[in-house]
Length: 133
Image 1 (cartoon, rainbow, N blue to C red):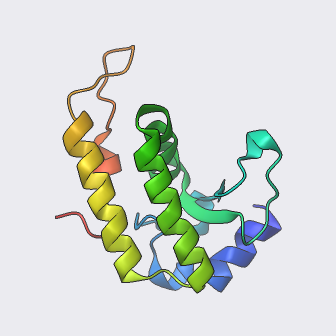
Image 2: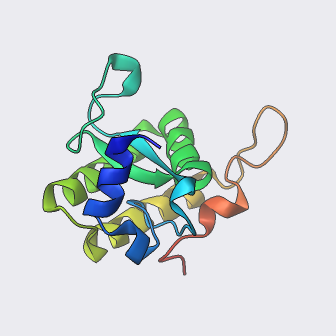
Image 3: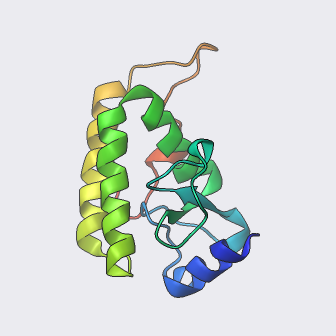
């Protein structure tokens, strides 16, 4: 695990909270990964506190990149909420509620989409998060 990831896990007390920047639960730090927020990695984005969020790799991180491909506006809205959490220096329940609203909207709008292999675009594990109703 990269040092910046360890630093952010500690700074945001994620091991105590047991959920990531998008409100997805995790059991151990090995499930977490760094996500570039402002300047993407593909554009040479730095791995800094200001440019990053910590996400659970095979749920929220993968899901966020799926959303980026399918509905860029919703991806930007989610990114904006995570940037706000980053600026605040803590994971705020108001941001998590807004994130959950955006994700619920995405799930409502795209629940019938399938991948090229015929699998549902929105995997069941993508819908299991802290505030899911």
